[in-house]
Image (cartoon, rainbow, N blue to C red; front, top):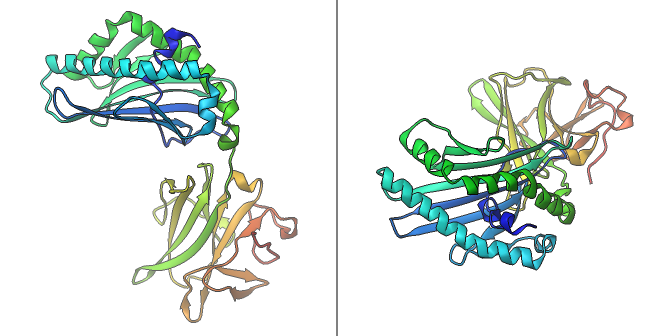
Amino acid sequence: MQPCCLLLFPFFFFLGTWAELETGSHMLHLRHFVTFQNATSMQLRGLGFMGDIKIGSLDSLTGDIHYYKTWLRSALSKGDWDVIESSIKSYLRDFNSLVQKLTNHIRMSYPFVFQTSRGCQLQPNGTTRSFFVIGYEGQDLIRFHMNKGTWDRVPDNEMSATAEHLLNNATTLNELIQVFFSVTCFDILERLIEYGRADLERQEPPTATVFARKAGPAQLLLVCRITGFYPRPISVAWLRDGHEVPPGPALNTSAVLPNADLTYQVYSGLTVAPRDGHSYACRVRHRSLGTRSLLIPWGQSNAGLIAGLVVALLAAVVVIGPFCPAVYLGNPCWGAPQSHPTILSCFRKRH
């Protein structure tokens, strides 16, 4: 790795994202947060991610890198990492100097926070994308135009105009940034893909439950809870009598949220009328399931609502406790096209 490019590595090493990536896409995405308490005091936080996998952080006191993955240290030589850690300290001084110049031009009330978001992405078809954005108080302030090698203000205000002017005068730095993010970042990304392949290709299948709660005097809210899956992309749909329920006010699906064990969870709710004569099931599709889908039926008994799962088999309602093993679509024994699934023929327990 070229020394000039290594000096720029801390500009993008500690950022992160929950953004959903296309299957087969890889992104080195890092975030760096600096809280300025006053003119002489700042607090630093930096995190580095490969996709959504946390691979490292920045020591707020020393500027040293903490390696969260053993393969991260192996991906580059010790000499490269030594130069990176040394240049981080220089970068922090330069970043602080830039902020001080901004405060000399603009009245800013302490405390305030600056963020940086930088990285590069490699698509399955070979296309690439690079980005470098500086934010203020959670909003984009200025971003680097990779093709032109210049900075463009995001909002049109005094602060963004001043930052644009200051950074566009740093022509040597901008040339290095342009080369780094256009070339070197992808060299590093390919090394990390090679060394971190086991983590990057990890798959965890989802588990799901369906339950109901009263949503009003004449309404039920059916809730499908899916958790424990990885990677993040997932498809959740409700089926009414075997047909997918179209989008509408009765259907509401949450954002996909992280669990503490590096898996994800999501909820989907469907509002229905009690005992409306229809059958309902939650269908889940995920990469770990291959071509199959996870089907979780919901049903009712004469005793009232069952806060769990009900599997209908051969037109009879069989209540299997408060929870039921999931049902896979795509099994040859189903004998029905996947677009019109049925739960009346046979099912296979998930182990």
